Length: 460
Image (cartoon, rainbow, N blue to C red; front, side, top):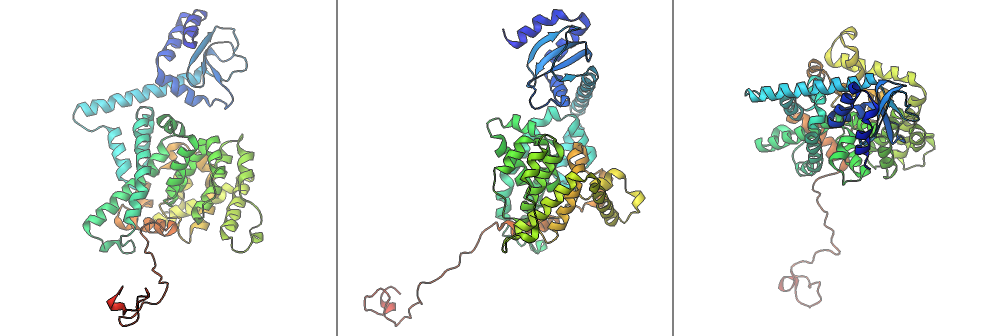
C-alpha cells in the first residue's frame, strides 16, 4: 500500500473538522512546501508530524521531509520521536500562502487591465538597477518567490554561464579610460555591468534548495561552486556578501565543496574561502566544529618565505575564529559600517537607521581586487554573524539609502570593478613573445640552411 493511500484510509482517525484541514494540506502542494520550509526539520529526521490541534495530543498528519503523506494519528496518539510542526506554524504558513496568492491575483489583474504588474516591474528593476536594486522591490519578489523561483533560477544559471566569457572579450577595451570607448563599446560594457549586478541580486533572492530542484542532474557541489565562487569572483563587496550568505544557507554541501577544492591563488578569493568556512560555522552549530577545523589558522609570522597568500589566509582565519568564539566582536563591525554610511552620506549618526547602519558596509559596490582588499574583508569577517542570520530582504538597502550610498549606473562604474577583475585573473587576450633560436641572417650572408647560397637567393 502506498503512503498516500494509507494516509487517506487513516483519515477516519480524526474529526470531520480536522479531516477538511488534512485534505487541504494533501491537495495544496504550495501550502505544504511552505510548511516544510518553515519547519526547520533536523537533518537526520526523515519524517515530521504536523499538528492539526494540540502540539502534544494531536491529531497529527505524518509526512516525509520530501512532502509525501504517510499517515494520520488521531487525538491521543502521540507523535513519538518526530519533530512537530505546531498548529500556530501551520496557520502562519497558510496565511503566508494566502497573501502570496492575493499578491499574484493583484498582479494578474494589473496585467489584464493593460498595466504591467508590480512583480514584473520589480523583476525588471532587479536586472536594470544594478547595485541600487532596492529592498522594497526585493520584498515584492520574495513574497511570490515560490511562484517565480523557476524563472529566477533559470535566469541566474544562464547569467553565470554567459558573463565571464563576455568579460574576457571586453577586457581588451580601454578600461583605464572608458570615456574614449566608442558608443557601441560603451553599450556592450554597460550591458555586461547589468548582467553582473543581476547575478548578485538573484543570488540574494533564490535559495540553494530551489536551485537544486531546478538543476537536478547537476551534482550539488558543482552547482554551489558555480553560484558562490563565480559570483564572488567579480570582487565587489555586494557580490562577496551575497555569495557568503548563500553558502551559509547551503550548509553541509557547501562545506564539502569548499574542502574538496584547492585554494585559489588569487588574493581576494583565498580570503573569501576562509570567510566562507566562517559563514557556515556561524550558521550551523552542527557543522561548526568541522568548519572551524578547516580554517587556515596559526601564526602568520611562521609562514615560510615566498608564501604570502598563506600568511594572509592565516590572518583571516584567525580573525574568523575570534568572531566565532567572541560574539561581542560584532560591535566593532557595527561601528565601522555606521561610520561608512555617515561618511558616504554626510549624515549625523542618529540620522542613519539601525538596519542601514548594520548593512551599509556589506552592501557597498567597492571592489575587493585592489590594495584595500585585506582590510575590507577583515571587516566583513566582523560582520559575518549579522550576515548569515539576516533575512533575505536585509541583503538589499532601502530605496532612499540605495540612492545615497551607491553610485548611479555608469560606464565608469563598470570599468572600475571590471578592470580590477581583469587584472586579478589575468583574463583576455595575451601577446605571445617571440624568441629566435639564432640571430637573423643578413641578405648577403650564407643561408642558415646550409645550401651555400646567399640568404637572399635561398630561404631569405
